[in-house]
Length: 203
Image (tube, rainbow, N blue to C red; front, side, top):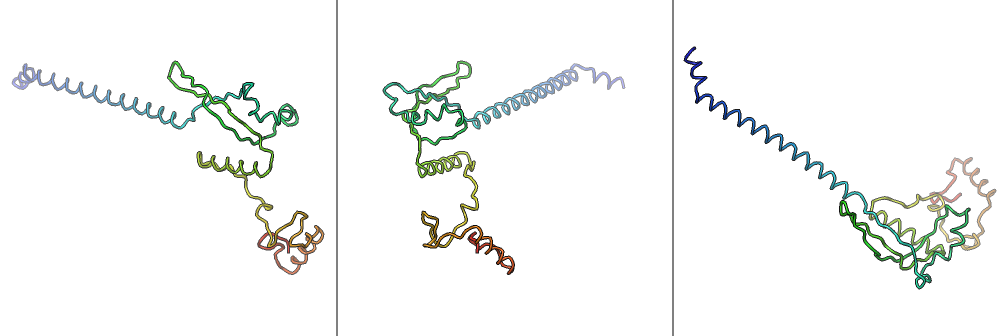
């Protein structure tokens, strides 16, 4: 027992024990430092991902100079824009733009561009409006995946075998009246047949 205690308290044993404890301390500090670096890397990755998913802010300058005013097609609807009854109206326009300036944040260096309108015109013809709305919906879907196309209605999908003329006639035959359509529907219902054809037309 005395010999064992003497060996335990010998300078060599104390040196080995001290070195072992120092090695453990170094290992613990290394693991703690590694956890701190991993947490920092994860936080930075989260910030980068957030920045990559957030759209960049773009300011708009809509001021036309005196020489540029002929290219400001909004004057065509200026009376409507100040009409209180039309505050919720929507107008379809086509325009060209160009960069005007870039502002840089002094703290984080973020750059915010400002664009200006070179030319803008309001569309008033229904075919033009429909074409531009379809183009906007397509570009929105291509860019973001969002589908802004209005859902089809019965009037969009219901069609006949002939072409309608401007007077509501089909192949020279006048459209049936509401009473005639209801009478046809009742007759087919009484006979156990569907009230409408596959194309959506009353039979």
